[in-house]
Image 1: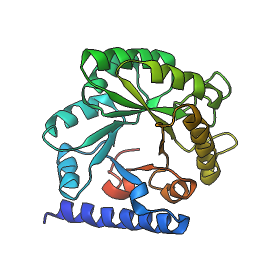
Image 2: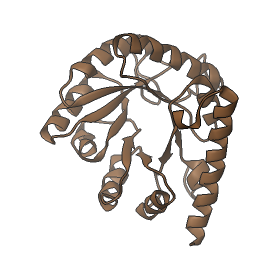
Image 3: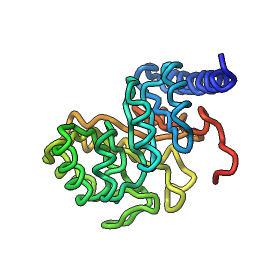
Length: 239
């Protein structure tokens, strides 16, 4: 086993133990939570090692990094998640490899993704990114639609050809009433998820929690956690 594979295996085992412990504490089954490894800034060789170690869900937040990496790893059985803020000029590229776009936060993006999915003969899973720090009608500092815009965007997504409304995503806010209160933020997202499922029963995916706060996300009821640093480490020279 190479040094890098051994390192990733050890890190994965630690993250797996954290998820399992969080599930046990919350009275949930381990299989209720899917680990997505965020591989941004790390090479395709790491993605291959992760696949060898059993990882099946990976995420990227920049198309210029993700597109070549996905192409290099096209022979692997992986589900690719796009989790970054998405500009419409990148939509055609992202729609060619992403299986799930977790950062849908405006109607213009729905229209662009739908056209790209139909043109590519693909169905894209979509999550509405919710900004818990955004005022009505605004977007969050880290992307995302204000909570009062969820239902309208959900309707647009559900009606868009080539797209599938899978659920909601959030990033714990750095400002506003939920800053530093990750569990409260994730509990609020779960309330929105419950409301959304009233009209869209299949939209039951809730993506929340990262390396530092995955336990709070699992406790709140998240179905997917997005973990980068805790698996891949902190890369020198990157902020």
